[in-house]
Image (cartoon, rainbow, N blue to C red; front, side, top):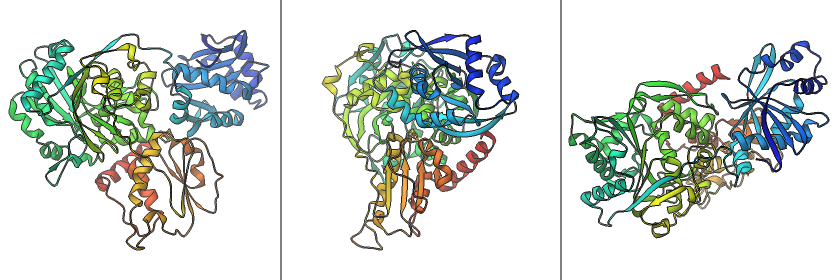
Length: 584
Ligand code: SF4
């Protein structure tokens, strides 16, 4: 909770009605407006009326819709002005509710300006009961900054167990299976998670073909098939069916090729009647509402996961250049169908990773730490042999433990921190009982990627407190331009002379004025308010393909690198556009 501020649930009172009247009278005497704002029934039937006070002083009210995580109303209590109390009230609200949206009357320019200054960004306009509104989303970067070192308002109370098991350096299939058996025994054995006759879905990480190029295996990118095989062998005597399910993230039409490339298709031979592979990118879908809908109110998930009795999440111990770590929380992004993956970027990747865990709940996570990946993970880093397996029932506790093994603070990963702050699991050491060797005995510090978002001679980057999302993805693209320029030997492509100086703005704060005589790119939700002043790259963070197209567009004649199957990406982009036309 913000310093000395109390947030208490109350009722729609005569005092609130009076405060609304006092607040709106100078904005408009329009009876429609006043009627709509002063009548409780016209706000939201399920709204929470938060009274915000400091000691004996009532600062004001926040009317909040918990189903959509939206601020419907924020009003000061006379004699306070909005300007005087808005930051304290919002700080108190986000300490309790974390990621929130806001609806502001289009004619309420003061509130719009205050929310914008705080870190909310306009994402849509709409009409309700004859009134024009602006829908605003809070920048996740601002949210993460505000919540730094804070504890969840509704903490996860249970102590979770996370098991760690060393695997012999020789890593023979028999040794891996024995290690896996010992690992699971620490948690009560596989029978604790799977009952006789159940259908079990294993979700490994087979993100792309980067782990096996030109016949050369590069470990630490995809889940080691030997761990999957050992797990299938342990499951076969118990389960009715074992499904290995994945939806590749890069080149989304190619999951089947990835299964074949890494030899996963041979796992079916272990018992062709019971073992099968499923491409989650082409699976049937079922739409599910997201509890306390933050950023997205519903998501379409594959029926294979919805129908499974047990889901076992099987990620790799690896870095992620934007999410910091790609472990249990991040691995379920691959479980979403292609358009949902694309939409996650558009509507906020970090929050939507948390949302997925409300809808798909693996009973067990096993992290493949035979070989991890440090530096520029998840696909372009360096293998790091760890000879470890890590497992537990709670994905947040497992990720927190795995991150400590990698020498990272769990709160450094935005999706892990948000999952913790939203009560999905613990990250505190005292709430996680580590079974097996102590973390200090197995910790090896993973080298972190050096994120460099400096521009070139005519390309300037203005990074105003952007989070690791935009910084990581922009680095990913700029790094491709820091190579020798074949047209100008001795010079880097990024330093080419441009016809007009160009700027890329990212993050929620501005450290330079916008010069309309130059080319300006505005990245992500944090820069959404400047969309009309140049080219806006939508998303949070924008999809890599969107950034590649925009940045390469600054360099005429420069051939774009191939990130993924362009036809597939263009198809998804078009589908998303159609959805947004309906949504916005
Ligand atoms: S728009 Fe970019 S900087 Fe802002 S919160 Fe999203 S990912 Fe972070």
